[in-house]
Image (tube, rainbow, N blue to C red; front, side, top):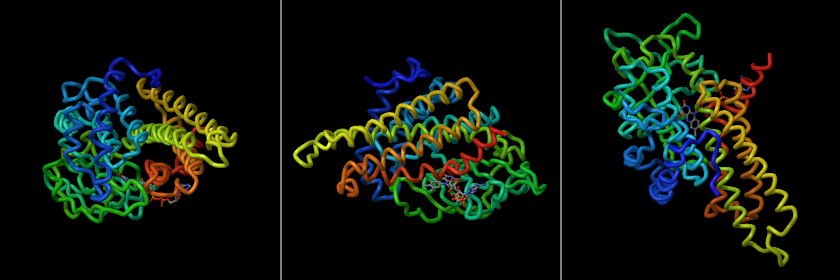
Length: 381
Ligand SMILES: Cc1cc2nc3c(=O)[nH]c(=O)nc-3n(C[C@H](O)[C@H](O)[C@H](O)COP(=O)(O)OP(=O)(O)OC[C@H]3O[C@@H](n4cnc5c(N)ncnc54)[C@H](O)[C@@H]3O)c2cc1C
């Protein structure tokens, strides 16, 4: 029986089959080729768009489905479950959310249809070589020149970095020394060619996902491309929208826990040692029972956060708890599942090893575990 979360409506249930079919037919079979290429085929975006998978949370008037963003949680969880992570959907839901929640009516009308159709491939461009956790330390600048903004600076670790053509860039637009110096500036498809793509970085996991250095060397965009239309709001916008990013990462972890547990149950029911199935050892059953417990506790908490989000009430501490708990549970469960595979678990050809390699970064991006603890602790004082 598939699990149905309390926030799911008939609309979500109807689209769930499409999501599963999309991953089974369009993503999983192509992942090995994409891993060799270090990036996905860009056509996957328009395929997803044509199926309506990119329109969650976007009003119909702007090319969306008129269904809430809950479908994005289902997509993230399914992607984690099948462990084919090259397609940078999580960035799509992040960027889309910024524009839905923070864009002016004109910005929504222009950019959301491009995102819903898959013509726009998104990146969220925050991290710099000298500033990751400490975003106030960024040095990239966007300086007014007539009717334009001119962006200069270097960024690193940017997901979809080789392929994106709609980039939300965190840039310094002032020098007052306050949080109001930061703005979010959108580089649209017609300006994206100006962005210099650096190395596609070689990672220990997520091999089909392009993660890149980017250089902005006089990139010119219209001054109207400041998200929300007013300079200096960027830091506040980040604080408001980062909880959604963290919740989506948590759903990804939820799916990965489920996928790793399922394939391990199959493995230990098949593998024999000392004349018995590995599943017959009490240790195996207890280890898997703990994994199941962590799966269900993770699901309960992230679903509670989704209910809060859909009511407009997801706070920073709750989203941080979701990310911290879910990504740590993912690491613990997958480590335990790999152990139950014995030596085969360490071999690349066994899927659990890929779950292991892909899991590690979940505790780093979207705010590290230490930053999550910092944010949670702030809610206690
Ligand atoms: C695969 C991948 C994809 C990514 N995708 C993107 C993307 O699309 N866009 C983007 O902008 N960025 C992206 N990132 C960057 C990611 O968000 C940063 O790596 C992350 O925020 C940490 O920043 P940092 O690497 O500079 O580490 P640092 O900030 O240098 O942290 C180093 C260590 O110090 C700890 N630390 C830092 N500050 C504190 C503190 N106040 N208290 C306690 N401990 C602290 C950290 O937790 C960490 O353990 C990606 C990273 C990876 C690996």
